[in-house]
Image (tube, rainbow, N blue to C red; front, side, top):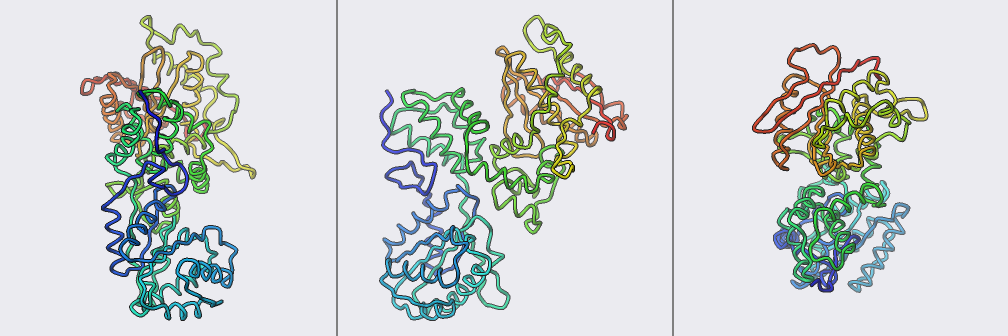
Length: 509
């Protein structure tokens, strides 16, 4: 029997352990304590909803038991604050928290007055540091630099700057001996930690998550704390009396996130991706390796906002599969009337074998006929200046996606993109009449990548227990290699059906 929960999964703001399921992250707290005890001024930066606020509040509480006095201020909404207004706000905070009276109206005077604070151990945490306007930001950081140099002489022994952008480079100052080299990383949860968080609910309520649900939450969120809590919150609030939350429950929540939820963090990610649409679409559709270079402005921007990361080979990869899926959907073109042209002259009985399974020979042939008639140009979007917003490769992908969705609507099937963080589009899984099928499509680059794609499909089919995969490859008509052809193969026990869709690189766009 499911018992009433004492706590809940938090989806906004820092956690209160008495109210919210909260991980202690003991080793991470110990790292923070060590930096503060060594009187370091350091940074904590990470994308939103990674648990930064929860972390530094837990750190502060622990340090207060060790004799430290802690002041926390959030400057997120101080974009319009002048030097005088900011210093008045700081003065109020110091007075309320420490009974310290400051009246400086300029940063140099603020620095001098801080030097007079003696015989205390103060930790000063400044959250959302990028919230200051650029001019004030620079002056404030230089004031902190100067305070750091003389920290043995005053009581501001440690300062933590918290933000969503890596500000280490911003506050390096070659003219000063101060060098904030320390950045305390607050990583996403591990799989083990996500399981631990979910288990807290299981213990309190007797309501359990199916093992597959736990695995899928780890996969789709990459253990991003905000999304982990978001998925868990949706699952348990939708089914308050259900003893076991199953995979179908999970799929409905995933679909809700993609099609209905107004999630500010997903919306933010989509907005940032749109600012670098050409780069992101290359990652989604071409699988061209891109070295991760943090000094590249585009890479730095997308990384700091949580869309991409550095993989084990040193290349760019998508960070959170859920964000990848959301961006893919957001970039899909609006209705263009093409879906109504796919099956006008098709007898649907020919699309299935007698045993009820899909006849992909007929399904793909019908799509190839469509491409010959209509090309891909109807899946390219233009901006207000008449310039194309999306890449040719993206138009190919959206064309086939629209075709498949029209097919599923006709046969009352459903589909989902299997998440992964690698480049290229995720594997498409179809569920029709109780049968599941995997389709992987790629845009041809070389014979080597053509064969590699088959191995990837084999691996995925094996991982989910499906014995057959469909491999669809879009090939420019200038490629005439005999081995690039339709074929049926068995690779490591998995049947792979390869279909080639030829296109004209000039005329079809």
